[in-house]
Image (cartoon, rainbow, N blue to C red; front, side, top):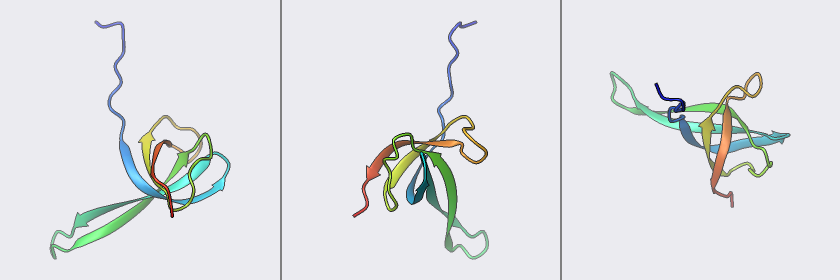
Length: 88
């Protein structure tokens, strides 16, 4: 047995910041496209994630990368990894 525990790769998502009105928290909207099983049309589905932002660095409109983490509060299970692109 190994003494050192290895952690699985954590889920990551790329999305757009839609709100930063809370202290050290942001809301990130992640879009994904799925194909309708019958009509074969691509549909865009959006999910919002409450995300921990330690430095209050992200602003609405920014494109960010978030990573899954332990539960930080009732709704927060994701944390900000990096800001990919700043809003114009």
